[in-house]
Image 1 (cartoon, rainbow, N blue to C red):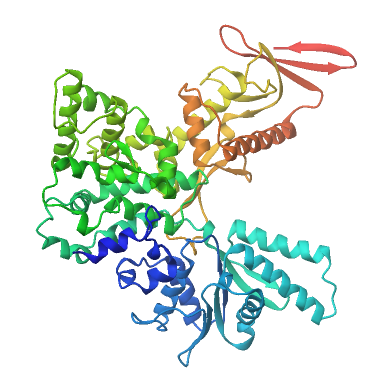
Image 2 (cartoon, rainbow, N blue to C red; image 1 turned 30 degrees about the horizontal axis):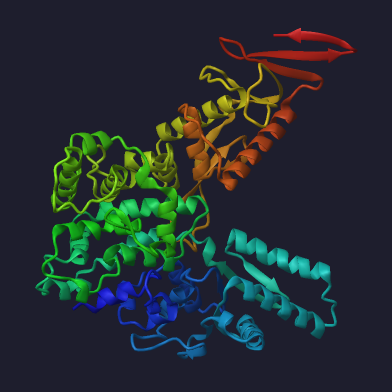
Length: 594
């Protein structure tokens, strides 16, 4: 029996036992510290507090963002919390050199206590103390507003609508931008950090390593059923191909994050714990299990909410599984499909996992040959079979075409869209001049096609056209200006990473002029890649639509500043290439110049 299996099963909400899914229960579990991840934010804050600075910190965000874990880490690093200690709702810690007041979760308290505890925390620096207060965002904003109202009343100042709006603006701006700057509410100043804006994707890679720790699975090694156990099979196979599997997991969460579907720490843990066990317990494991059971409970299937080829009831209550089903990555055709499904060649899949896949393929082939097979447990259509095998390849497939770096497999461009790997490389500060120039060319080619309806790599300028909303390109289109392709530059821009777990992460920017830049999102890079490669792209992402509109508006404004007054241009699409005609109006005389 391995109690860690029960702990994993209690961390997701696909079953009735979800006690460890709560932050407080995680902290109190003996397994918490064995899988605890030290976050850079926790190190940064504990360093500032231990330096003698009297700092008030407010940690806010969504439930499950890891706020409590950050508090635990800080208390541990400052020597206020040992393995046998538990968190209290509020407590003042003092070791002679550091005095720290901490509130575990203000959101759970009655409103009068919220105000009292919050005010005490914000006022701590004025009393030569530090403080950390945790709160969900809604209650925090309301509490700060009430505190400011009481401050104004005590000072005989009217807390009117303008003062209220000014406060709300300051707080909302900080929640959105997460700057490392102090916020002032009256004579109180504090550092407010929105955990919902902290990039936590790298947490997935770190927690996978922790979950695979040999110490946590030593009880399984001595179990007489371990050779038949699908849970232990998952652990062993992922250990052998850890970088391969973890890279696929990280790519999935990165794609979600960049598409405004950020997963909380708790949601990541929920999906990964379920993908390891499928909520099987040690008591469920039978010594007589066939290998087909290992296939059903394979990590790749459980991660997508499947038991083999069958969807698992209630699995999509786990947010990550709901997203995986929504994206349908396992339905996308891959270059390797012919090798897998036509030739039945599974040499790119590890031997032990490949053995399970080969058995499923044998049953698949027998169905096509109309041969009865009493052992056939694959009672479904071929489409579901293919999805299951693709899932295996996504996580365990051997990247022979790029064996040195699993983070940037061509497979990910197939799954997530052309340009995914390029964007992530720039974001991770792993760039080359060729990579930058190729992306710039892709964007300019796509914009030209977007504006004119035709492709021209030889054109020097991109005309900004007025076209119909249905994307139908008229034969003649009025232009509002043009923009030189050479004005475009792509670059990675470093930003303040004090709160991030990755110190080298960069923003991907499109430079439009000497001092004007536009932040590119992953959906935009993928969209440009699809357009430039002749693919039909349907925009269904609101942030993508907004981003494109903003970019076009910026280009229009820049082109208008450079345009000659009184000049009108039109684009004429013909069978060869678009022709630009300039029309100059002078004293009611029209002069055409082509």
